[in-house]
Amino acid sequence: MTLMAILDRVADATAFDKVIEPARRAVLGALRPQAVKDFLHGTWLGHPLHPVLVHVPVGAWVSAGLLDLIPPLRPAATVLIGAGVAGAVPASLTGAADWSAADVGVRRLGALHAAANTAALGLYVGSLVARSRGRGALGRGLAYAGLSVASGSAAIGGHMSYALSTAVSHSATAARALTGEWIDLGPLDDLPEGRPVLRTGKGRSVAVPLAAVRRGARVDVFVAACAHLSGPLDEGTVEDVRGAQCLVCPRHGSAFDLDTGQPRRGPSANAQEKLEVRMEAGRVMARPPSRNR
Image (cartoon, rainbow, N blue to C red; front, side, top):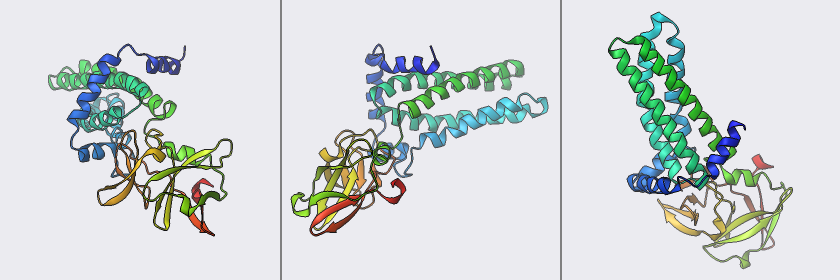
């Protein structure tokens, strides 16, 4: 059985849900107010923050592993290990924030990912203690053990990101299925004022759900699958969020600026795919932006 198959089995296992769910609620309770969550998700950045910050511990620890092979450079390796330990703290906070808003399968794997990262961090702290006491050989052994565990944990994180599509833009994936043709969404007068409605766009192989919001003579059209976890934006609401009118996902509360599609509130850190719109004889026409055509 391959490693990926093993990880898929872990994602499907329900055995630890009774432990994971209270932990998730505790994380949600600790990460308040909403502005703190949004900062950790990377909503302000337009990109998940966790993969940015993990470069610090990973890069520091890999570099330390190389320097430990060269005796004169081992003091520098110790400095890098310390930097990695310090950098692991904010990285873990952003990871916990993303984990708390993830699908159940991702949460199961995320718990394993967090346990492995905690073990690796403990080994590196032990390495620093051993080095400070003059036990260099033990310190190097603990550091290489930590690097091995951290590498295995990175494989789990990669599976969560790529195979299970966490922290990616689900709306961008759906937008790629649209053709580049103009889509007739019907008469402007058929659209209700100030709330999203479902319309359908012609896709290359399947129809793509769209969410259309009318504001007077203006219509904003988005891919209906929320960028966060494909929540149905056509079932959402229009609300004022931080000074902007936003389309709010009914599942996890991500809020997207109607004018730009940018996230105003997380957990989504990715923008929502927005279509170009024009009017033809009182009918609403939409098509994907040029990057998707």
